[in-house]
Length: 350
Image (cartoon, rainbow, N blue to C red; front, side, top):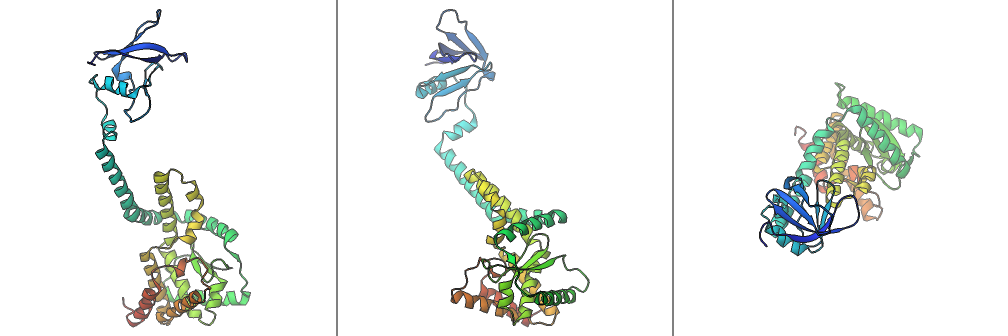
């Protein structure tokens, strides 16, 4: 079928739902439509105004005309054979889609880009964006996160008021000694009961540190260790790790949306992400460093922190470790962290 040869097909004029039998052919740079019905005039369209159908494996071919009309051809193979002889040429994208090698290269490239973005791009971008979030916005996010956590995970603290005041006073005194120049990041300390979280502590965006009654009771005879835990959380506040984690969750939800199409569930789960996603290893190591420095500045050997991990391990072995693994209970591994605190005591200049 040479170029210019006619093809019998169906034409919709854009004003009526009735199809007309027509011959279509190319005449130079013009698409000519010649109706077979008497009384209908031939239609001429510049080729540059015609939107040709993409070549696919299945499905009919539909060609959109500049005036709203439409050519519809049910036999795809017949249309493609006619099209191939018109020497119009198809776009690079369509040609790529028709090649299994092109599809394979595109798929591997997409997987590689997503993988690199996931492993390096998201952490790099989230860390930098988190550092530039206005403090007022970060504080608002922290308050709203706290409100949601109050509804799901927290209950009012059952600790006696005198005990809370004593711990608050001890903590503030240790912070002032460790940050004599007043460079401690703004923060608040709150106590909450949380059977679901168990012995735990966490730092929210905006500087709110929450410690559970269960952790206070676990360390009732080791207040310095409890202060070390709070020092760890203060390290997260200082480095804005909570904001970093939220930004990272947002990026991840966007990536999930790109891959799977539906990200609504992920967005709704952002508050829960605060609890279920661990900080990065680097963030945890930085926070451990801040905890060790705070204890050391107060004359407490950082090695006392080993008690925390011993008691958490004992709970785990006793089958009492049902709580979510967040904050101080997250990675790196306990043995690595115990070694860090013990060796830090031997070499505080690191």
